[in-house]
Image (tube, rainbow, N blue to C red; front, side, top):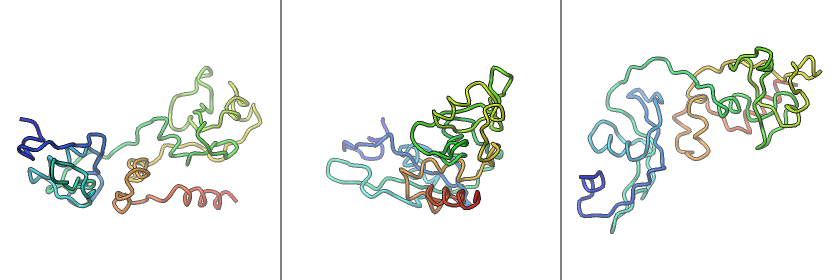
Length: 198
């Protein structure tokens, strides 16, 4: 028996698989992100409660059902301290989507190894920055000092705050914002960065 037959006997229900849900610990700490289908099952079996919902997110033959968007577990989960994964997206998020040499923003950002890899530069947080194509090309296989280019700030590993772990979802899930401590709109964050630099 499938989930849709278990939850809605005799009904054809469209479960939007691509929709995600934010999972909160019992103390409202953000834990992880799961599929809306998984969130629905956790609520159905009494393991979680719905905190935020999308009205009419599940469509049956003659009825629309609310879809969980934020759920809170009924029990406290203990887990190791989370770590921010070293990915292209996370580097761009740490650098606020702007080139760390000229400050330009845009969709054509690339990754740059401050100390080039062919010269022993590691693939680590402290050696990776976002760079526009023009700056990356200008720097080439040199260090910033050799290329007479200056970094706007030294790269470092970000702390695993809820904003760092879940902030990239917020463009598509505005209803999660109250549950992500430390989140600030990108425009506001960029303004703060500009004020700090001047």
